[in-house]
Length: 270
Image (cartoon, rainbow, N blue to C red; front, side, top):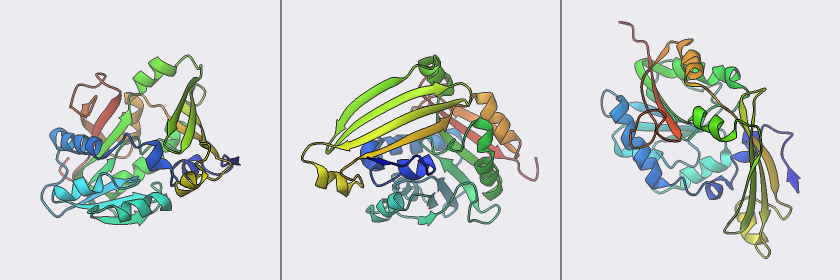
């Protein structure tokens, strides 16, 4: 068994196996999400402008973004997922490997920044995630928008707030997957222990997904925010919430399992 808990959890979690583990988050869902965003706030003022997909993963949103006429830039720390993104037919845009806490871009370069499918909250308790918000504000142009797609913290607390673990076991092609989720009140985080094992006779297929014969264990740790907490983090760097929805269909906040939030960077006129 390979245990990756001595390294940052996101380096192990966002490996070559990630697209298999989250294969239900597919191109159709990406289209639903991206069709909603312009209903909440403008992505750009016109065609040809730069939009940053922050934590772009395997690039499933990039092709949809390119089709809107913007110039998408995808940034991710995972070399394995960027390789998949580069291989996607018609993915479009530019791919950059980097850390969202120190973006390799100039100030005011982007008309919009997208943090989709919980591509945020990785660095400890809620307040410890200020650095990526600061970087988002820095690279946004005045009047630009940060679109944050995050799980509904209230819904998570309703499910896991008692601190008791919830276990799910499933099979995904060549892998046996065991996931144990729990809420840790002391740090306001959801902890998910993930165990991946090749199924009998599937060692070769599992290796193609980056999972060796002994399997892979890691622990995801994602911050659970309140809406007020997210608003406060954003306001500290000049980002004000201007819109929100509770699902990819545009329902009200609290109506679904997700928060689709839009924060606007103050313009010079503001």
